[in-house]
Image (cartoon, rainbow, N blue to C red; front, side):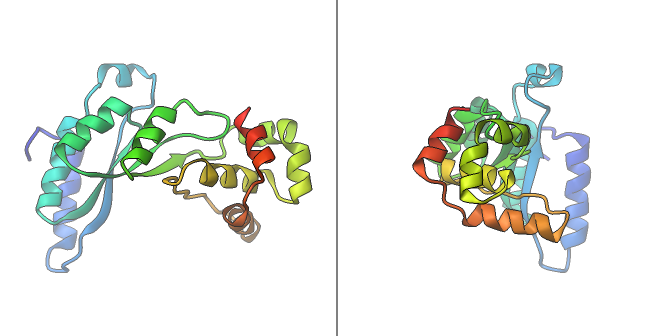
Length: 191
């Protein structure tokens, strides 16, 4: 593959080829995940070009339809976009941690889906302390408030909340259906 992709990408590509051979199927979206932001590896690895080139080649061969990125900076997103269209970005983002606002804005501007991972991380304790009264007035759980805030925060956010029980599924549905009033959004924005 062009660009000397990592060994694991070559292995995955060969498995993808083997799996889809004869079946006519393709992988819908294949995401490249990088090191955690701020880590030593992230500081050394400033480019994602080799694996993006590898995925672009798989896309040209019809083995994958869309390319996704995870844990990227705005510069890495721009670099990848020069190689192949990016369909989605998955980065760490939630009410309590908004360090990735620049990537969220860049993806929204380009109509690229943004999937926040750990979307409730750090929020539950904050919700009880800072948004408790408003949440109680709405009659919903902190989880529903956090999900609703994310969905209202940017039109390109797509949530994939984990669900371990029927009760948790109901919370997720409530969050998707909830429209927070402007004062509640302002209160959460201030966190």
